[in-house]
Length: 114
Figure 1: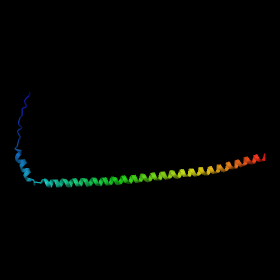
Figure 2 (figure 1 turned 90 degrees about the horizontal axis):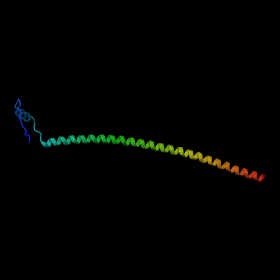
Figure 3 (figure 1 turned 135 degrees about the horizontal axis):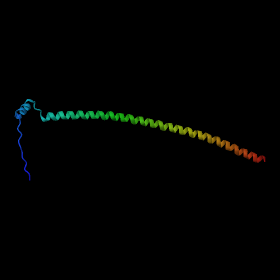
Figure 4 (figure 1 turned 30 degrees about the horizontal axis):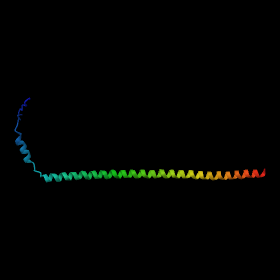
């Protein structure tokens, strides 16, 4: 097995005092204060997300309403068009029935005259 050789690193300065001074200069913040700040930030993020979701859901609802209205208009237009076509066909059928009756009467009259 190889052995690991550990060599120490010599620093130019003694940083221990610098670290201690920088920490002691700062005001100590309690864990509870940090938790409150994190909760507030989290609540702000959640509120922003709620606003975005509300905005998007309003847009989606508006788009769906518009699509539903367009679909209703298209269906109504199609039904009206089909109804007009059926009405014309019915009128034509009545005309054909009348012509057929006249033709049958005409044929019977011809038979009677012969």
